[in-house]
Length: 349
Image 1 (cartoon, rainbow, N blue to C red):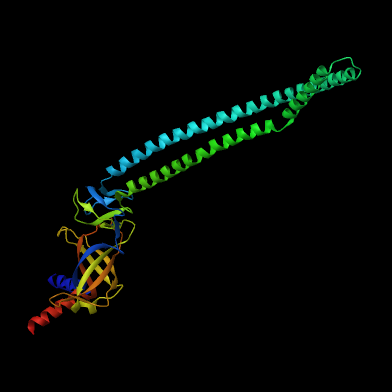
Image 2 (spheres, rainbow, N blue to C red; image 1 turned 135 degrees about the vertical axis):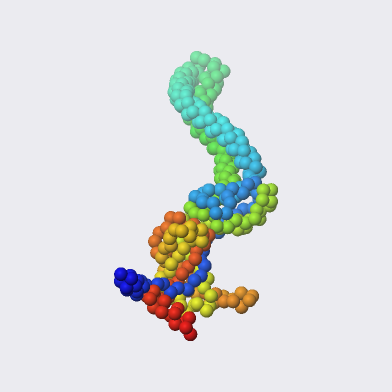
């Protein structure tokens, strides 16, 4: 029985593979660079609206600058627009009334002119008839010269009145009225220009008010935030912080000692285990080496490391930016029996 147990243990240790790995530390990072949040305009800081690590949506306020001066300017512009539009409305109403009155006056004047003209023509006809009759009687010696001269004068007066009514007096009157209407229309042009300018200034002020609220450019997580406090003056163009878009892939960044660099290559299997995991639970998962930097970086102690990027083998919703992991880069697998044999051999040597 003991022999069977020993043989079974030897067989199990022979068929059971053990990972031979290189160890390193890793941290969760977004793939690619984070998006910088930049203040388009400067001003006094009223409120810092987020903290590092906070999840934000597109348009969420990151930093609020004081905008009281712009709100007062907007109120002033709205008041000026209101009264300028009232002036313009009064002028347009006056122009409309003048136009209606002119149309009615022109119609009445035309009717009156035609009546006066017909009366003048009738008066001329009567005066001519009267003069012809007086002239005939004068030449026969039946009326005195004074009566003849009075009849001639009456005819001249009637002809002059007809000539006056048949002239362009009515057209001149209409032209004068049209000139007055054009003058009223012209006086409305600068007021309309003022209204358009005020609306443009109001639109620019609204845009400036919007710039005083510095917002997140994307859905994501605030990964860094400048040290800012209320009532500080923020210069325009200042980088307020960085946001990593949630749509980006999550990778794990690791730094491998130069002595172990030869054992790691792209596509290699990596076993990952969170530093915060419970030692009694096996929550490790696999990943794959995406890339390894061709050049090592050295610190002041001349200790070099290679930057290794690892892609998690499955989507893990529990991964958060900044989480740390133990990374085991599997270089090869050996049977457990073979490892025990080497241990015994090393002990005898």
